Length: 484
Ligand code: HEC
Ligand code: HEC
Ligand code: HEC
Ligand code: HEC
Image: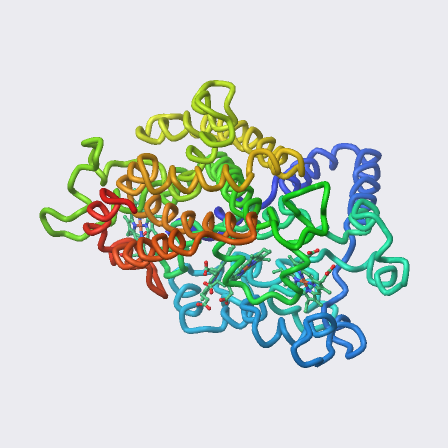
């Protein structure tokens, strides 16, 4: 096990390291120490504080019980149906207790450990609020998503709040979650991980579910506390007629930007992991089945894939970046593998991962650069003009075709991760095209459904999925050889 003080140190943010680093330097000069303290105070003030979500629950605010109406009932809806309301109590479960024991979490329980609270609650809440005599703030609550409320709590109750621009609200710490890129970045903070929030191989081996995040799928499964129409109407297909009830690009943007941002955040996490030289190599970066597969001869994993490559070779975990090539092929054209393409850095890293020899420092630098290119691409697709052009209903249709024909077959033959991404993406693109056009041909939709049903069976995509060992993929190869 590579957990304990060393790992916590490795996981602390660069800012925290810089502070501790400069402290030992500041001891030399008292003047410099005062200077540092002033900077720290200013920096601290610019970070608005959490006020606690219980203040949202008043009946006249978000705590009303108005039957089927969503507006005004956000708090009870969240408390009763949103999985995020259970995130803190999950740290009291049997599985969490097992993890705490196996991980030797600095001799603490899971619900006291920053390694777990960082995603399941407010990371710093326990220490600070305990010393202030308050109970720790529990779970992923309103402020975790909408932003710390210290500065916006009072203004947002005023009549003129709705007239304020997203920029002005943002400056008060209120996140603009209508923006798909902002929303995707929020979800991936915890569902992919980020510096200081890491479901690494230690956690996986202790029993933590693997974080296989796909934004469209998670967003669809998430019980929402606002009307679906709000999302749709803010991303119309036609700019000239924003009130057009048919035609929304929201689902299309959610899929495309979700895929890119998931890859971007994974690269940032990779950079962080590789920079922590003591704990590198981090096993969770590699293809799980390279090391984990059933000990039987002629297992699907041991057979070569379509390109006659062994499936169990040591290679990069393909989940986060599997969909980048089809998406780039559709939106950038034939030069999508070229050096000017936003995915070229990611493709180069994939090649590096076929060998263990690259120095971690180089991996970290390359991963940072690759993440930046992906971010710029996500920003481009997030703009209304580009989305209307590149994610048009026809573009979505040809993307879906790409996935059920050549490109999809190659991806599905690669490994379970890529195959499952193809499955989830065909489904997401079906809904995206339907939302963009307003409707979809019923025969075509039925055909897609038949295909997805059999794919799902062969992917053995079951609840409580813990490791790829349980999967049975032999059927899939045959299935995708005969696409509808
Ligand atoms: C990077 C963020 C992150 C960190 C760090 C993290 N978790 Fe989680 N955890 C999640 C997410 C996200 C899920 C939901 C998984 C899913 O369905 O994709 C989850 C799920 C779980 C579950 C299953 C919950 C259920 O309802 O079945 C348990 C138990 C759990 N985590 C415990 C822990 C413990 C204990 C730690 C610390 C050792 C920890 N987690 C650290 C993000 C995190
Ligand atoms: C996991 C993240 C998450 C959590 C937790 C969460 N929200 Fe939201 N909330 C969202 C997103 C995303 C939207 C859609 C935002 C938009 O379209 O501007 C939203 C929308 C809303 C809206 C409607 C805003 C509008 O302009 O239509 C209200 C009100 C709201 N949330 C209140 C709450 C309250 C109160 C809580 C706590 C009980 C809460 N939210 C918890 C993510 C979250
Ligand atoms: C602060 C961290 C955090 C953020 C931000 C966050 N989540 Fe979660 N999410 C979690 C944790 C932790 C769980 C596991 C809760 C449990 O089961 O105990 C979870 C669970 C879920 C689940 C249920 C998964 C399952 O397997 O049942 C969905 C769906 C989900 N989140 C969607 C989203 C979406 C969409 C966003 C962005 C709008 C988001 N989350 C933002 C931490 C977060
Ligand atoms: C380089 C080889 C390697 C890779 C890649 C790897 N593991 Fe492991 N894994 C191991 C070893 C060795 C152990 C046993 C030692 C330990 O518990 O850390 C293990 C243990 C485990 C365990 C606990 C024991 C068990 O069999 O139930 C789980 C769960 C697990 N790994 C999941 C994963 C997942 C999920 C991935 C992909 C994200 C992965 N591993 C990638 C080598 C690897």
